[in-house]
Amino acid sequence: MRHINTLENLLWITGTALKILLCAAIFYRRVYQRMPFFAAYAVLLVCEVVFVWTVYQIYGYTSRTAWYAYWTASGIVLLARGFVIAELCWITFRLYPGVWSLARRTLSLSAIALFVLASISAAMNSYWIVGLVETTQRGLELVGSIILLLALTFSVRYEAWKEPMEHRVLVGLTVYSIVEMLNHTFMSFVSTAYLSLWNSARIGVFDIAVGGWIYCLRKPLAISTSAPVLLTDTATTELLTELLNGMRELTDDLKKVGKAVWK
Amino acid sequence: MIEFWTPVALALMLLIALVSLVLLEKSERKRIDSESHVPLEQRIPRNYKDLQSIESQLWSAEEHKRMNTWENTSLRLRQTELKVVADYLKGLRDDFKRGNSIFSAVILHSPNVKILRKLEWQRLRLSFTFWLWFMAISVRLLTNSISVKELRRLTDVVATLAYQLRTLLATLEEAGEGEFVKSLLKRS
Image 1 (cartoon, rainbow over the protein chains, first blue to last red):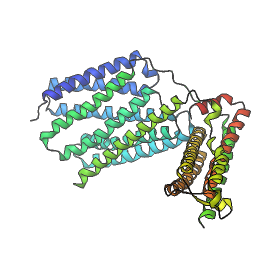
Image 2: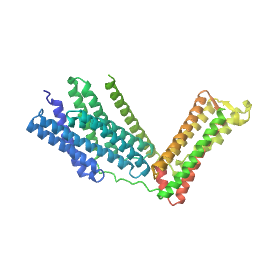
Image 3: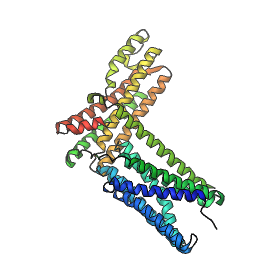
Image 4: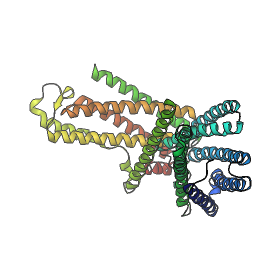
């Protein structure tokens, strides 16, 4: 039977303290007004700890009830994280209809693919809740990290900078998603002797991310500046079409130049 | 083992991509902050205007060697002229980057995905062609030579880009979007 070791216990306590602190900071700084799903996610993190801890105390760490309680809570938190990822994309691009439309399509397609994969795996697993949550988690970690990286790429390419808090949440969640993806690989391959160490490292990474979010909230959040509206939709379309034609001409000129010089 | 190494390699690639993007964002923000004191009129491409002066310097330096018409001349450069041309090329690169940055800020406001896709496609083609030319001239410079024709063509590309940019900004200003133009230039 596997027991929780001292390091894991310490991380559990530190993690819980950090999650409670994050919740307090979120309510103190009124982050829920700007990022409601992130605020809900932070609350759920605390609820998960309290719920799972209580079940462990009443039914024991190795009981069937504890096992179901853990996976159910993980599933709910995982779903909440998916919503936070969507919220981050929405916050970054909502003011830019063209880019947001592109990002939304990518996100929706990934979500559908993920759901199909999770359903197939769950149907094949005798413990369906584990199958559903594990596969969803593995898929979400990969898709989530890719979507977050795409959001970051879009934001760098178009110089649509995010506020520090949103930026920190995005980077923290991306790192955590990548580590979680690795976690599912290591679980199957790494010897049990190292599993505890790896698990501590994984929890440590999340605690560092939470610490970073708390650090960001030490000061009041900067007032989010909305992007100026570029004329009307019709005028924008006309202007950009003109720009497009200009760029086409320029590219064609370049092609001609290339032929002339290299012939 | 492939089942083990594939996700590990994937995770590593994602981490590298994340670090690169974060560093890129940081350096861009730093550049914008450091240029906060630069007047707005200097934030649009302008280095390409130095071509005439560069050409006259090359003309004087290479006068005794010229065999063909000036446009078709391929010159072998001495250290002094080499530095002048290399600096000019660097200026053209900065112009292009700056122009591209302003364009990206405008493209960001595309009202729908259709026009965004078309603009992005053109932007990618243009960037690809510019960098191809830039690399070709840079490689030639490594052998201490330069083709006047190529240098002029590259200058033409940047000049046309700058012209389009000026037209665009002027149209916006005429439409009463002066504040938008200012904010655009400040963050590009």
